[in-house]
Image 1: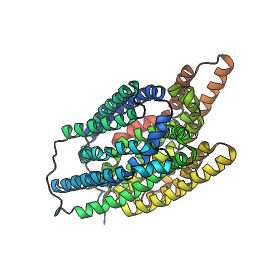
Image 2: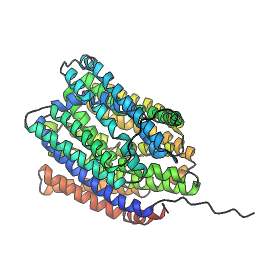
Image 3: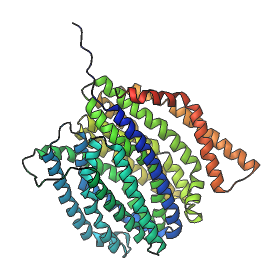
Image 4: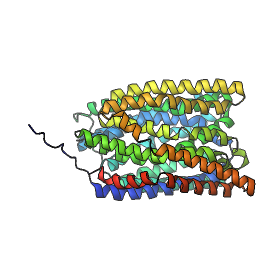
Length: 493
């Protein structure tokens, strides 16, 4: 008996292509704005304020994970979602936001005691209020993603980022010190919430019970466990550095970490807006689902492998250009953490694979185990680095090594859960990996030759390295890049 062809799922290709162009442009602009703000603030504020805010931000990040509770992911992932259910999720978020703010305020003296810095009490109290502001626009942003209004959301985030950066620069120039970074948080969050409400016409109704929301909250709870594990990986190292080594080493480490992870967020944040709803719709078509997964990872590898290798090479001059001599010690730290970029990007994308097939319990289990391995890595790195006289660099090495150890089993578990052949994923490493390696050799040769002929200051050297790196990678990976552009739309039809 002949089998009928596998049904194809419906996907708005034209809308996605238009949104994709807008997202790419907005992300590029956001990087320019972010780097411009950092250049001003690094020189205006110095190193110490970033160490202070770095001691508070892990608690802020924890509060935001608890607030979200995976409910934004629920809004995006669910095939069917009523207006009453969205309203119920909205009010749950608001209640969690207020509770998180109160708990953070109560814990402010403990933060100051833990780091032995009294001024952290007031700083923590000030940052507690961001929990309330953060949650106001969460569901509206999730609805924009659900409806694939990705370009609109990208523009809103760019506008909010710009307003927050402007506020930070104004306060910093006025001598506000660390409060410039607090102002940046509030202005960006308030602006994003207001713009999201303006762009998304949905308005919440006062309803909590009788909507079937308990099942949705349960799914979100499993996703929150995964988010908490990711939080531990992303913050336990900073807490350790701040407690053991102090605010200046923490500032160097946390800012190097932030710069290394910035390209990951730039790629993964908009990609999540496409990947999660696309995969969720394709679950009923196994072959198309697998093709989509492979296509997304092909794109991630083609972008993140050269980005990681390239930043690892140019990290020392990058920190000197951005922050001047005071930030030069962060260069080697950034170089090590840059190698974690493709690992972290793939790890994050695999969580959307789990979420798209409704396997939140497996996601939470895998995330907890992964967090244990990575935390052991940077703890061991701190110990070995201390013995070698480079404790901060040791933490960075431990973080990157931990991710390298945990990613292969995590990858196999996720792909097998989703029914995607692992050998097909491995095929996506070619030609991205050899092209990235070739690019790295070309940039190193360029730097060596230039140093022999005419040594350049950091800025022109960095510009030259970036141009040479981009050109050489485009040459080595030209076929894959052309193929990716041809297949991007075809895979979604």
